[in-house]
Image (tube, rainbow, N blue to C red; front, side):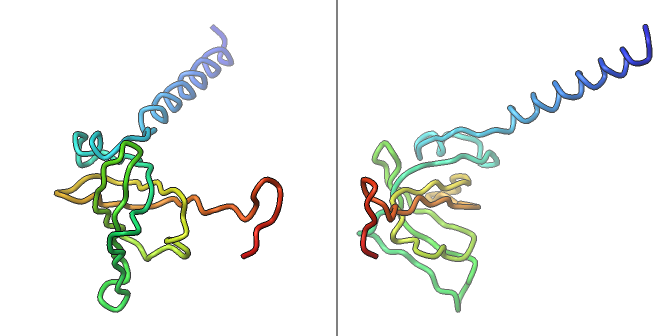
Length: 129
């Protein structure tokens, strides 16, 4: 076998192994029930909406990296969420949230949150801000 063939086979093998490892680390969306049943070390993504009728707590004087709120997932289950970051700007205006983290005790401890904010366009026409 030529050296170029061996190098080509090694490159292909490395590419395949890296693709397999990336697929193994990818997470899927879950609801709070599935998140409760998963390993606490495993990160899950839970999509849902903010519950505005319950308290949103952020006290930057006490702890600027702790923010908590209640969220309802796609199946309708509510859960207390603790975000270990500062409160995102325009958080209350978000239409949909995706929290990334794990369930610890009775709360979902999020390492990050993704927000889908309302669009300023409605049927191709600009809304007043």
